[in-house]
Length: 173
Ligand code: ABN
Image (cartoon, rainbow, N blue to C red; front, side):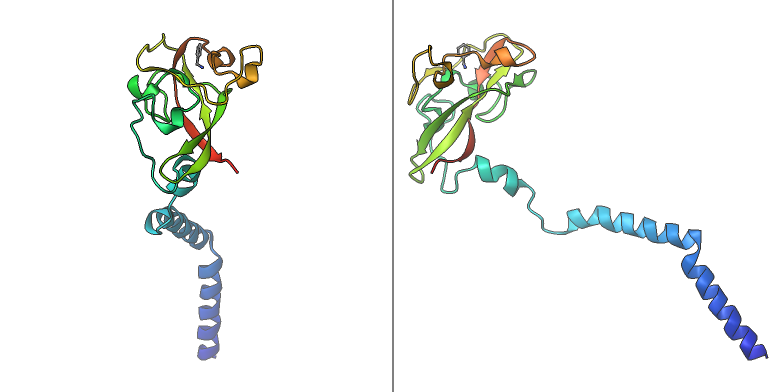
């Protein structure tokens, strides 16, 4: 009889242990800790997706502070890299325009053509440094979508133009 009692007690305890609220919360806690630790522990390259569109595979030659830099083949404006930003980021305190002029430039590093978006940075007075006007594939102002002499900040919260960045959007095929 005692053996039966013990067996019964043990199985009851097992059921209680594995189905209790405390047990459930304990497991949930472990899962949450493991879930938070996994992305840190595993060698996941999160930058690759962002950089895939941004970084040409074989090099990015030239000086981003010079109008001659290959990405600026169709730019008209002040280089943000001379204005406290970089070739791909607006200076602090400015906001990137969502509407933009697009050009196609050849990267001498790999001989490929890249689609470049020339987003204007808006919200601060004109930077007035490194003024560049290169007009590959530009068309006259009466064709505004093929003209780069346009203040794209007109479509942003602030229409005040500060400078222009040059972001790779993809390979032109
Ligand atoms: N997209 C550059 C720019 C801004 C203001 C005026 C002309 C050109």
